[in-house]
Amino acid sequence: MLYLIRHAWAGQHGDPRWPDDNLRPLTKDGKKRFKAVVERLLAAGFAPELIATSPLVRARETADVIVRVLPEEPELIELEELAPGSQLDRLIAWTNQQSRGRDVAWVGHAPDISMWAGGLLGAAPSAIAFGKGAVAALEFGDRIERANGELCWLATAKLLGE
Image 1 (cartoon, helix red, strand yellow):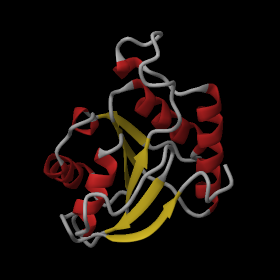
Image 2 (cartoon, helix red, strand yellow):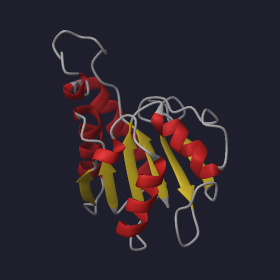
Image 3 (cartoon, rainbow, N blue to C red):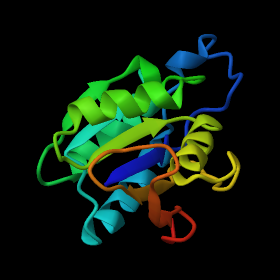
Image 4 (spheres, rainbow, N blue to C red):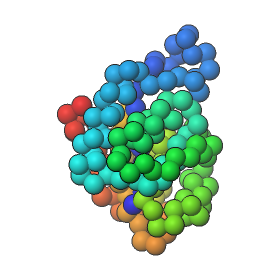
């Protein structure tokens, strides 16, 4: 299983408190809302064993929420390939090398996350919209490959009542 996760609710883009947008953190409410989302997903079997996150603060903080909620602490790696503007083929290659049969999560940013989903499912790049804090579960056979995934579910905060 590969989980695609858009970072949770962060401070406003362009806020002068974060002149370097890479350092823009999640809001207190964003952390709280995303924790509730993860708790709901946990009850439904969400349990990535390896989490790769963009190094940007808001994505790392989103990954940290997942690690704190899951009962079995997953391995957590910051991965430059998940920063905005990354290439799907590099992510696929890295994940196939690292996963060793484990469920993996990618924590990233819009619009990349929608483009990755489209590429993995063989759909248009904008076929699946990811709101902040959204999580999608894609299933593959032995290896992750372009246009070979099956969307099992897409959970949004609104759908989960958050």
